Amino acid sequence: MSFRWKIPPDHLIRNLQAYEKRAYQALEAMAADNAQRLQDEARQNAPWEDRTGNARSGLMGSSGREGRFILIVLAHTVFYGKFLELRWGGRYAIIFPTLYRNLNAIRNQLVTLFRG
Figure 1: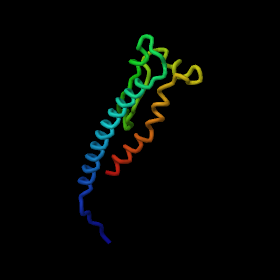
Figure 2: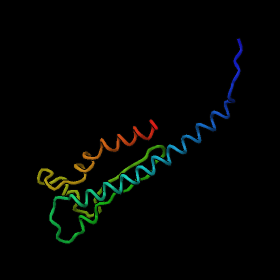
Figure 3: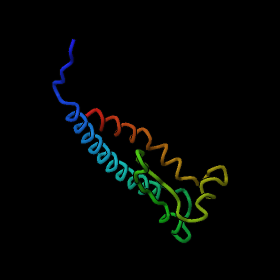
Figure 4: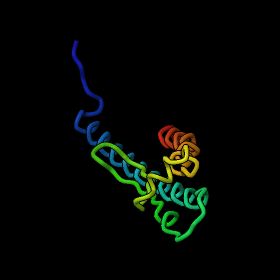
């Protein structure tokens, strides 16, 4: 019994590498869009009263790639952001509530991206 390739292996490898590149580009674009949306939502819904506006304007969403991982980050840039998130039983938290509210939507985007 012999085996004959209908499509040469090097052609398959090139196609897989091209698919990987397109998939990462799509994921990076999706992550950037979601990071901006999370930032906007967190700034709009932050439960604290602004005195200086620094905490609200310091809520930052960003995205990036580390090796094979695509990251979406939502964070405070003011030093007291951790106290807003953790003190008083999380009464003034905005980071995790915003992330939790959006996890299903992001998951659905990923499913749609790889189904289509």
